[in-house]
Image (cartoon, rainbow, N blue to C red; front, side, top):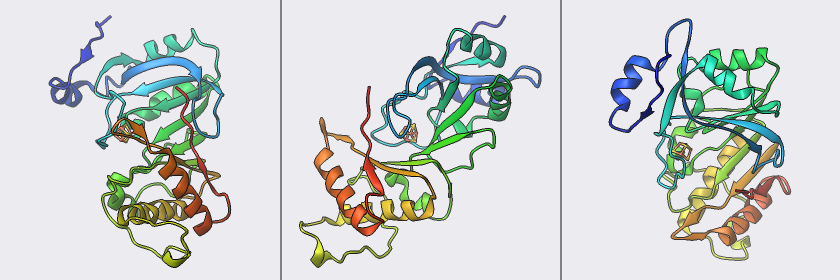
Length: 248
Ligand code: SF4
């Protein structure tokens, strides 16, 4: 059996071009980690699940805390063997950005054949494979312009990180109520972020919408997040947007 190695940032171009997909008989996957735990955030908080974290992402958010460039190439048979040691029947495919992984469909087919319920966590810029049962998508304000004309229009839950300082473009739109009705001052960046969040809430049909605080300069922007949730819940239908509390 071929030895599995950790792929460094310097190696990735060569190896991704030559070995990413594996052979037709035995595809390989960029596995950052596989582990069993409880879902720590969102609507399914507390749900037992096996997490399959795939390497690489097509975005590069400045605040990203995932080491998605550190992964091993693992053949499908070995991925399936690793799952046998776990008991959960839900699998959360995450990353990085899992949807851009070559031949992801062959992994999902194998998992469906074994009866797993499949959830995915995606940045929402790409269509999600049909094998997926549950979609959690996290549109990124720092790439706002890329979400305007493309990306997902349906999901189960939408999670938006409150990256007010990083919002890359004002996607426009009418915010209600008008400025004079706000009970506090809203900065221009907050207004741009709200345009983005409101545009995502209108574009992506989902059962649940969340704003998630972001750590900036060592502090979570929890108060700003709560304030913006209040504003969005005035502009959207009542209590549509909720606070996403991340556990672990
Ligand atoms: S989309 Fe997610 S994984 Fe990719 S860089 Fe942004 S935060 Fe990190």
